[in-house]
Structures are given as structure tokens and as C-alpha cells.
Length: 192
Ligand SMILES: Nc1ncnc2c1ncn2[C@@H]1O[C@H](COP(=O)(O)OP(=O)(O)O)[C@@H](O)[C@H]1O
Ligand SMILES: [Mg+2]
Image (cartoon, rainbow, N blue to C red; front, side, top):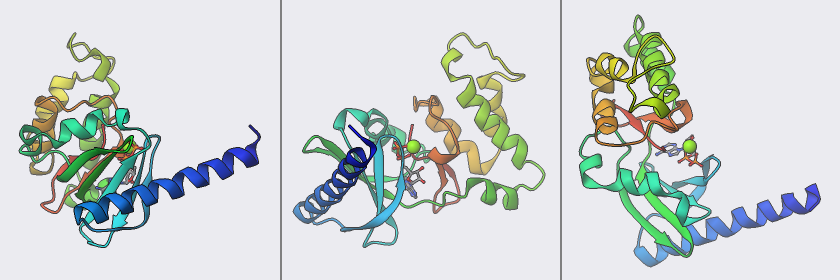
């Protein structure tokens, strides 16, 4: 497939995804998608007609293991993941309505904890970097995951995030683009 062909197919797939979300919204009387606000390897995220809600659609419903896990009430109740109000498989896709969060995590932390924000970020990064050796309790870096979680549990902004990880949210895809600050000023996982 040449580049031009690939590009036109990509555009067509994206247009199709928008239509699928629109159809789902109409069928379920949920806010309609308006415009794209984010995109990753697996999903496209749209602002909805409700300013407080976004909607995420995956190209393929098998790519929504994390979303389904985060939707479980015991994980929602930790307050350390983004609030999800609806999640369903729909026509080969997975669709999730979730709270819109502030994605300027570093900017927010910098203002709130000018002296500690670098350490806070480093400890979050450390959890992601060492995730695959979580069970062995070893670490490639200075601190173990356990020590990083202990550090982060002392800050109001990260304590719920630690609870979510302890309850089983995966840290395997932990990076800035998958984190946000929710309306109660807590760090939350938006994708894992
Ligand atoms: N609840 C949200 N509020 C604000 N922006 C979001 C939200 N969810 C996702 N986004 C934006 O969309 C991007 C892609 O979403 P994500 O769920 O991480 O998709 P993928 O699984 O493809 O990485 C995120 O990096 C972020 O910028
Ligand atoms: Mg992501």
C-alpha cells in the first residue's frame, strides 16, 4: 500500500469511528461527540457536548482491558483512576464516557509542590520503569516500586493513585500522556 492510499484509509477509518460514537450516543441518550481532543496508539478521544465529559473509542474492542478494569467499582472507588460513567463494547469497538481531566500534570504539580514536584514525577516514572520486575521486588534504579509508592502515599495529590496501583491497575504503560488531574485535584490514571 502506498503512503497516499494508507493516508486516505486512515482518514476514512477515523471518520467511521466518529460516526460509530455518534450512533452509540444517540442510541443511549448520551452526549454527542464534538471534536477530537486526543489520540494514542489504540484510541481516539473526543470532547462531547457536555464540557465535563469526553468519550473514548478504541479501533478494536480487545484493546480495552485497562478501560474495563478501571471501570470496576473497586477501582473507581480508589479515586486514583479517571471517573468512567459508561463503558461498553459496541460493534467491534469499546466506547467509554469519562470525566474530562487536566492533562497538564507537570504544570499542576509544579504549582502545588514547587519543592517536591521533581521527586514526585521521578517516583511515578520509577513505578512505570520497573513495572515488569514488580514481583521480584528488585529495581534497576535507586528505589523499588514499593519505596516509590510509599513516598507518593504521603501526598494528598498522589495517595489515591497509589491505592489504584495497589488494587491492581497496571503500571506497565505509566507515562505523562496517560495521567491527569481530576476535578478533586487528585492524580489519576487515564489509560494503562
Ligand atoms: N479523560 C480525559 N480527559 C482529557 N484528555 C484525555 C482524557 N482521556 C484521554 N485524553 C487525551 O487523549 C489521549 C489518548 O487517550 P488514551 O486513552 O491514552 O488513548 P490510547 O490508549 O490510544 O493511548 C491522552 O493521552 C490524552 O491526551
Ligand atoms: Mg494512552
